[in-house]
Image (tube, rainbow, N blue to C red; front, side):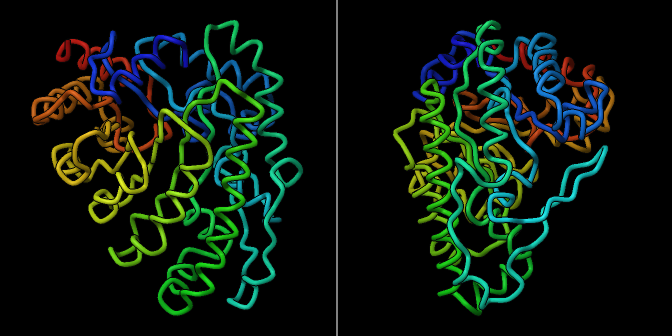
Length: 345
């Protein structure tokens, strides 16, 4: 993000009017490689192609904040790789991490990784270290430390179904697992901050929070997310959960979140009511069915309807309900941006 965009984001969070129309998108490996015209594997393997793809998006759509901005990642393999998960790579699709926990009795043997040395994490940092001078030449800085959330990581290490069963049938072991993962996550976030002092925000992504009930959310999600967001003092605490959010949204303030990206299946008005004042909402156009599959005219029409229906527009960062999905054409992003700018001033 550049200085003006960061300032506008802080204004939005503090309840002040930003200088520019607040538009932002989460962009990473599901969208950027195909849009740029390269394979997913090329995007992961080449610092140069990774940089140029991000640079092209920034230059083509300067009106939008791209969050977290120059995101160095290897999809869902990023954090699981540090725990020793086998990584399965694909030329044009996202990689997959194999399980490392095959039974409940494996949990006590799980060791906390060292983010300085383990898995793909040193490669994630080195890419940013290598490209930081060129990022800064563009007037941008690395502003976010990023990690998958504890429940999300647990689901990859154990399997989603098996982890859900453990929450109900083996709660002590589930807490033990989440404690190791969260302690590791704090280490990983702090290492990013130590490496890049320009970081002033944390982004956590955890869709598994959207699959559990209220009791489980209070017991298994809230304390560990709160611990992770407290890894270091931050100005922006950004949470992404584009699964069901009606149960978890009322807990956002307790967790410490002040920027929330949620599912398009929930209206902005509904989430605003559940979240309460003081939380900026990032959303909420359907990402796949409208932004990816629609025509520019359909994107514009659905965007107008979305904006018209929102009661309080003062704390909305206009976006899609989730990250930018595969196969979104640039024409549709342009239609979204132009429509928002014509409606919001």
